[in-house]
Length: 419
Ligand SMILES: *Cc1c(COP(=O)(O)O)cnc(C)c1O
Image (cartoon, rainbow, N blue to C red):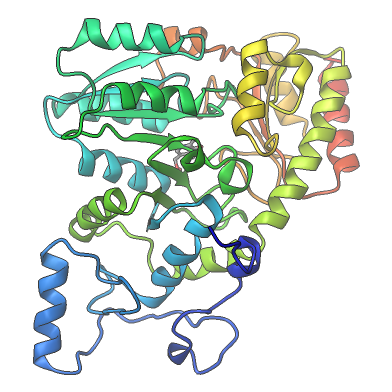
């Protein structure tokens, strides 16, 4: 393949496509309009034939604008730029990460299907699979980071004659940072695929983002993201994305046309702005997190720490996975303080610079308590099995000064009587 002329991060700046829409403004205007006029009735007929015929509205060099639930320029720039970062063929953006994930599942599954899922998993996705999908006739089979390819295959064969319809994994897992081997699970999906029935592998890549991991290069068919996290990155919006194989993305988009849960013009504009600094922000967040993880590792107040960048804390298997698929250590740190829930709460209440809030991946650092907050809707037995204890804290590291962040953590540990 010919070497690409420009690197992806150079192509995140605005409007290399369709300059005639923008009157040479440097930043894209927000297309705050619900509808678009047709040049002729014949053109209107043709556009509707495409969209209701399940065809992409905007393919090749041709852009067809009808109505903002289907498409609009801010969304088109976003969806054509984003895949350059994670090597997808196309992408679709939604009004939240859960909208992206639930629409993907509903577009690719039908009642009677069985899906393979990894654990631990983000509480919202876990709940959607175990509660909503189950009620609609889609069952699941879980595996954990210790399972091997052979074990997973034999569990599936024992469970179902027809196999699985889809593999869904999250790595690193929210909130524990466990690592799952993407290539290994893609081999499981391939082993169960036939010419007639390809089993897609979908990876939730929220935790490392398109800069820290490219699941599509490791055998995944789709990546899904909560764009409320690193991609938006400023803690000022909620959004989601699906990126990957064109045929699968277009199935997801077709359902989105009906559900109407696309990212709207203001959010799409904000996300285009955010893509310009995504690489820069994530690099700074990764290096800040490495400094903090080093401090926590040395601190006597900490019972355990899970951070992919601390190779001494990874198992032999995790080290192999890390070297194979992670392009950076991430900026999410999971750790347990000495003492139980009471000490964990004191520690959170005594932080000054780091905010006590859920969400992650923003320019601001956040800390929260998964046991009572983000993962409180996961059954207690699963929380215990996954290593989420009442003394477990999840920290998302932002772009502030690294020494200040370490100082804040140190002060709070001291004030709380932990250190
Ligand atoms: C936050 C998150 C989601 C859900 O995204 P929303 O934008 O909050 O709907 C899904 N997966 C992971 C790993 C997350 O961290």
